[in-house]
Length: 277
Image (tube, rainbow, N blue to C red; front, side, top):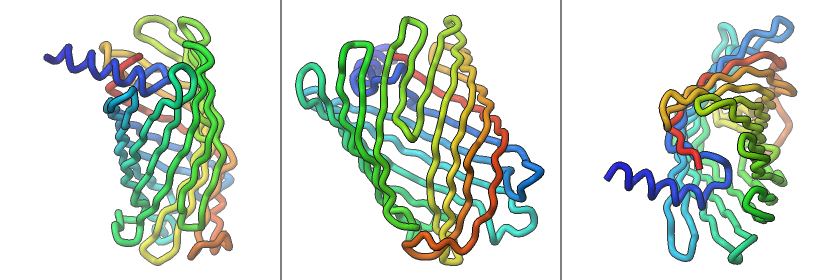
């Protein structure tokens, strides 16, 4: 029964995801180091999430991606400026084939609560993604679309462009920019190495009525170690650039405070239950 479950999950995930793996469970912990020229660089970040695909009729799929994340940014002795903020999200994606061989459409609704101390009353945001995919062949797929989210500073709209490319039997390039792009290379049956770019823009409602906007752009290298066929431990080291921490009130970008968040080094530790496709 256990083997049958994994086989069925593999078949569904292989159709729903064009990246080389899917993580039914993923935990990430990031620690950023102090930059001596800036006052608030150090932070810790925790993420727990999953991707759970379900097959519908006519080769359509629904993917549930619940997640929890928490930022704890060092503001020395004054936590009123930069309190710990968290997010609880339940993205739901529908993957719909538009024709038999080449085109598909992904529509994602992203309800979430972003706030200090998980305020379900005042921390709600609603966002979404519309992403069209063109499958050129079995090894190459292009993506383009748009991301929209009702941030606390106003409506945030971002065009998207992505690729899923199996370069050869050992190398893959996949992701959707500006969110994430990853190059992965297989060293042997247990070790994979590569590089990743991530761009982060989020806002969180604070208990004082203001919002905190976090922007980070992370360049990093990683090493994935498969302890078993499905259990993966990862180490990642990189540098955050063009970081910004800003606070305001209401739907506008007239920021009350700019926290002068500096660029700097970070390390990331990850553990995943992973199914390679």
